[in-house]
Length: 414
Image 1: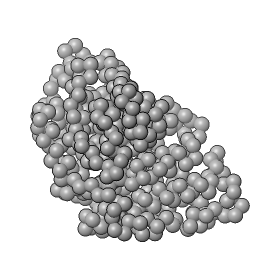
Image 2 (image 1 turned 180 degrees about the vertical axis):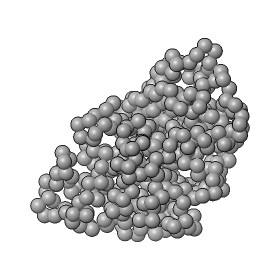
Image 3 (image 1 turned 90 degrees about the vertical axis):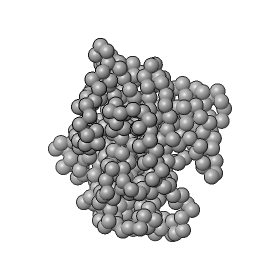
Image 4 (image 1 turned 45 degrees about the horizontal axis):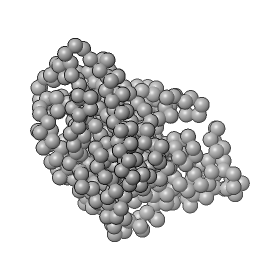
C-alpha cells in the first residue's frame, strides 16, 4: 500500500519489512542508520540449530498481529521470504488503541466478533501461502502479538489488562490450530509488554548474547527492553500518537523527529519547544508538511517519556550509557529515524548515536527464529526455552519508580 505523495515510496501501513528502497543496500547511507539484516538473523538461527537440518516437508510462516497492522510472511528453507500478506487489523473499527478494544470487549458478542476478525485475517494469509506449497508440504505458523491482541485472538477476557493493577493472567503463550495449521503463540511479559517485544528480544540477539542490548519499539506504547542472555529488564511508557504519524495526520514519527531537529538547529524552535512568534499560531511549513506548535509539544512529551524510561532502565540494571553495546530500534520508525536527529532533540543520548541499528520488524523476525527452532525440535522444548527467557525478564512499572516524574520533566526540553 504505497503512497508517494508526501513520504516517498513508503507504505501507508508500515511493517518494517525493509522492502522500501531507503531501508536496504545503498539506501542505508541515505538514512544514516545500519540495518540488522535478515541474513544476519538467519546465521544466528543456524548457529543455534547446530547443523540440524530443517525437515523438507514442513514450511514455516510467521505473523505479527499489531494493533493497527497484521503482517505475515512465508519463508523458504534458507530463511528468505517467499511471500507476504499484510492487512489493516480489522479490529480498528473498535478504536485505534488497545484500551478501546478492551472496552469494546466488555460486550461478549463484540469480543467474539473481534476474535473472528483477526482469525479470518490469519486464515487469508494461510490460504495465500498454501498456494506456494509443494505437494506433501505442510505449514506451521508462529505468532507474535502485543498482550491485548493475544487475548483477543485466543478469546480470553482482556478486562484485567485495562484496569489497575493491570495484571495479566495469561502470559505463557498458547497453542492454536487454524484451518489445520498448528500455530505457536509467543508468550508475553506483562499487560503492556507483549509477545511482539518477546520476539524482539530474540531477534535482536539479546536473549543469546553476553553483550548488553537496548531494544526500543516506539508506537502508541513505547516498549523497551535492556539486557543480555542472563538478565533483562523491560518497561512500557505511553508515547501517544507522536511516533505513529498521529501528530500531523499521515506524517511519520521519524519525519517529525527530523523536522524538529531541523527547527532546533535553525533556532526556529527554542529549547523549551516554543516556535518563534510568527510561527506560533499557524505553524511552519517544511516542504509540504506544516509543523504546528501542538505537533512539537506532542513529540516533546513522547520523547521525554522514552528518554526517562531509558534512564530508569539503566539505573535499575546498574549500568551507564557507555556500557550498552547496541541499541536496536524496532519497526518502521527505526528504519527511517536518523540517530543524529534523535540525539539533537534528546530522544537518545549522544553516546547511543554510533551504536544504534534498525531492527526492522523484530516481531516477525523473532517469530521466524522461534519457528525455525520449532521445526528443528519439538513444541515442548521450544516452550521450555521461551519460558526460561520469560522468567529471566523483569518488568518494571515506570510510574511507580522513584524519580521517574523528575526525569520525565527534565527530559522535555529540546
